[in-house]
Each structure stands twice: as structure tokens, then as C-alpha cells.
Length: 333
Image (cartoon, rainbow, N blue to C red):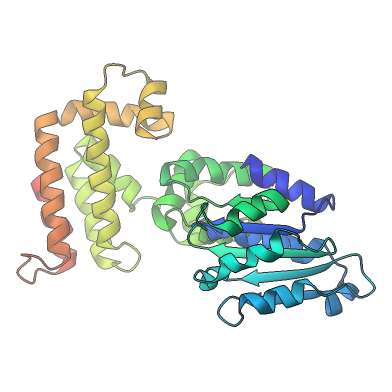
């Protein structure tokens, strides 16, 4: 993200703002930016007297203001970091009385996680004028493979498209968890070696042959044997392969095929853009669309919805969840 890179460069170049508001659903960048400020503003010797970390559940606005109005000791700045600031949601707007005229020698960092601070709030408008507001947005899952490649490229690594997709299928769009796994890989894999599905399987434990990515491919190709092998593997490893993830992927896949049928322009670039997929996978969708006509797709989507209800105990007649996916596969193929 360009905005993140710009903020990181400013902080490392010691161009600080008196107030930072880091807010949004994606906690990864909120944590990363606040940790960078913890590290960069003060030396280790200065931190003892000039760095304060507060938690929203333990303080009120008046206490935050009191800390902010202190003067640094033998340092140019003092840093006040308020973590879990969303815990102050009902009263935090009162902090605008301070942020309207923040103390130049104080750097206040507000970490408002998992949701956005309302832009209509006085505090939001105040910080927009006197400081920096950064909204950390959740990435859609189809955006995460490119994010993985970008992060690895900055570390001089490359990754195969399928390997990146395996990480997304297994970890979703949780950037923090993905980053932890990428850091593990960087410890054991030299930068001149491309990260492959085999290495993902070896070091992270995600099967390169039996995963939702391969299940989607087998269903699209009409490979009944392979699809049943994958589902059987899932039934033996339910904790790593929860039914809800498989149902979600299958539903998404056939919804995208429905969109594909409705397109007039089937060029790879256009299909990839509309469906939100990597152009590498367009040929799989083209082949699957030829196998599954629109009417059949409508029936499959209705069936997936029915099985989603069954997975939640509605009309399932106590059928074990491990058998639901097997039965769904029979219905589809």
C-alpha cells in the first residue's frame, strides 16, 4: 500500500506528526505502524521517562490528556500510545479538545482497531486537521495473493502463484497470520529460492494436493475421483479443513461462473478484472463454464445454500459434518 510506505518513510526520516489515528478493520498495519513509532521516535535511554503505553479499557480521556500535556525529560519528544482505543468509543470524542491544539513535544498515537472511527466525530475531523489519519482496510481475499507477492518481493523473494493461493485458502485474509508464516519461510528458505507449493507443504503443513484450491479445480474439471479423494482427506483432517471454508469456496466459485456466463467480453484481462481473480486462473473458469451451463449453476448454488443450512443443524437429521461435503459433491458432480 502506497499510503503505508509513505508513512513508514516519514517516520524513519523523523518527520513526525503530533497526533496519529490508526483505525480500521485490519489490525496488521495498525500494529505495524504503532510499533514503528515505538521504535523510531525515542532512543532506548529516552524511553524510560518519555514513552507511555496506555490501554483503552484501563484509562479515560482525561487521563490520556494529562499524559499528553506533560513535557519530555531530556528529550525532544514524549510518546503516548493508546492501544485498544476502540474501548473508549463512547467518550473518545472528548479528546478533540486536546487534538484541536496538540502539544508540539508530544506524539499521541491512537490505535482504534477492528472498526473505523466515525468520520462525523469531532475527533476524526480534528485529527484530520492537526495530525494524520490512516484507515487500515481489510483486503478482499482475491487481493491477498498480490499482497503476498509484494511483501516477499520487498525481501527479494518470489513465490509461485499456486503457493500464494494455498496460503490464502488456508489463512484467509488475516494479514497478521500470513505475515507470521511468511517470516517462518524466510528463516528456512534462502532468498534466491522461489517459494513453491512443495515448500509450503513442507514448512507450513498445508497439503499441496488436498486443499480447497485443488477441490475447486477438480470440481471445475469434473474430476470426480480427485474431488472425492480431497473430500475424504478433509474428513480425516476436519480441524485444518473446516466445512464452512469449503462451502464458502464452492459457493463463491459457482457464483463467479454465473458471472462468467453473463459476460459478453471473455478476454482473460476482462474476466480476471470482473471476477477478481488472477489471469492465470481464467482458463480454469472458461473450462468450468463449458462444463456447467447457467441453469445447472443455478441449481448448484441453491444446493450449496441448502447444505450450508444443514451444516448449521437445519434439516440435517444429525448427519455428521464430515458426510455433508461428500453428499454435496455427489449432488454437484
